[in-house]
Every structure is written in structure tokens, then in C-alpha cells.
Length: 109
Image (cartoon, rainbow, N blue to C red; front, side, top):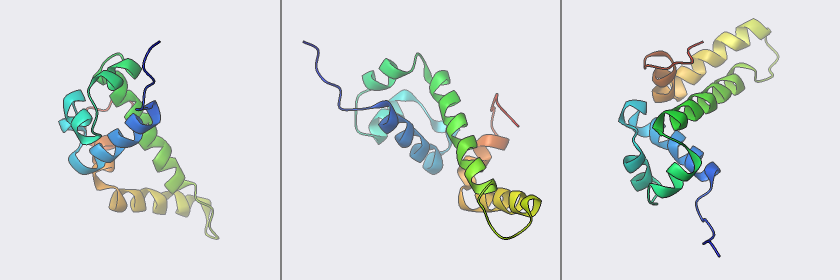
């Protein structure tokens, strides 16, 4: 009977997003991420074929977070809120903002 995994894909995604927040996407590797989330590289490669697939997932998660900032319901004009949310995201999440717009992101908006 195979051993039950204690590291889930959600844990890897959350850990990778936290890692990118702290160190940037340019420094991301499976070995560094595994050290950061305190596991071996095996769980990472069991969920992702390669590091590029993991980065694609990270970019998707960052875009989803940006959408939350930009679509938060307020009493102000929707267009104003989108711009304000974009600016707030850039200020509160500078490394994630850099990751989206100043890295080799293949999914640029």
C-alpha cells in the first residue's frame, strides 16, 4: 500500500505564492521551494511535470488575486475601483506585481 501524502497541491501552491512574495519568481526553483515549505522535491514533481508548469499555476493564482483587488465592491464608480484596486495591489504586493509585469511572464495581460 502506498504511503499517504502529507503535502497537498494546495500547500505547494500557497507555499509557492508566499515564496514568490518574499523572494521573487526569478529565484524560484523546486529545491528552494521544497526547502521553504519543508518537504522534499518529490511532492512538487508529483503534482507538476516541471517548474514551468508550477510557474504557470503561480501566474494564474496571482491574476486571481489581482482580480479580487480590482473587483472589490465599494460605493465608488466601478472604473475608479478597478484603477484603485490595481494601485493597491501594486503597493501591498510589490513582488507579485513585479512578477506579473516585469518578468518573463508568458501570460501578460
